[in-house]
Amino acid sequence: MTRALIVHRASPGTSVQDAGRPGHLADGLSRGGAADRLALAEGAALLRQDTACAALEMPGMGGEFEVTKDMRIALTGAPMRASIDGARIVWNASHALPAGARLSIGAAESGSYGYLHLGGGLATPSILGARSAHLAAGIGAPLAPGSRLPVAPDPRPGDTGQLLDVPSRFEGGTIRVVPGPQTGFFSPAERERFTSMGFRRDTRGNRMGVRLLCDGEGFHSEAGLSVLSEVITPGDIQITGDGSPFVLLSECQTTGGYPRIGSVLPCDLPRVAQARPGDTLRYTFVTLDEAVEAERRAASHIRTLRNHLRPLVRDPGTMHDLLAYQLISGVTAGDDLERGM
Image (cartoon, one colour):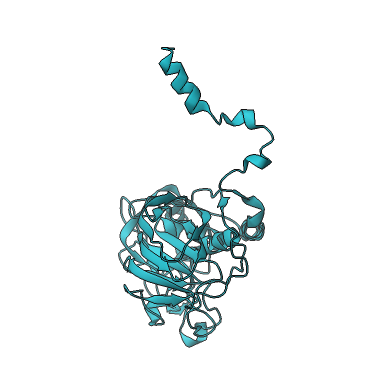
């Protein structure tokens, strides 16, 4: 039997994603790929495999899955309640998934996109150099119940039980923005107002982008809506006709004519993508030098993710200070209760 992931149930919009397919803007195709590429890197670190491996992206909630052979899995991105045959398992960790066992993944507890990684990576057909579905362009499609996805051979079978501590990026927060060629179309007063208020993520949003809501009137540029259509990229913040900011994400169009007040740093874009409807996002402008340094630090963090892995379950044989762990505290507490202490 071949190695495969069987999809018994999946949330609407669940798809295969990797880092996307750069280099096709001239053909009218944006890069696409995972909404949260940092989550891809975290899964690769947990399984000690290449970051190019494709994974399952689950928007809002997961589903129910099975594998045809014993496999390793890792769960990253928006934390979701997960279990194997009813036994709860930890998020941001790697686990063994036996053949025939049911992996159940519930709704996101925070954030928007969760990721299921498999040892070896999903081996669906490569189109234009990537396995990722680009739903807006009609490349690939959301997964349907009964789908069987091939899984590549795993070079490290049995290597599981790793945990990665991940700082939260799933509840909004402050987003760094660099000025762009159209930032000057907005008056200093408009730019200051943009950075002084909090925005709520609208319920309207998908892999193409998210709309932001704020109290008060919308934002307006001195150029109005007369900007010539030109190349746009993920992270650009368009000000739409009603004055609402719209942050472009991985499956955005390749050209647009709305004025852009700035562009989100790529390393902060996962925080935007992971914000849930109602979460608050704030924006602050940084200089180009500050942006380059932030991207350098983010790239260094990704390269060293494996250095931050720790065992999911501590091995008593490696614990030299056993007395510090209160391994029998429950028994002691019970004894105290029986003695009336």
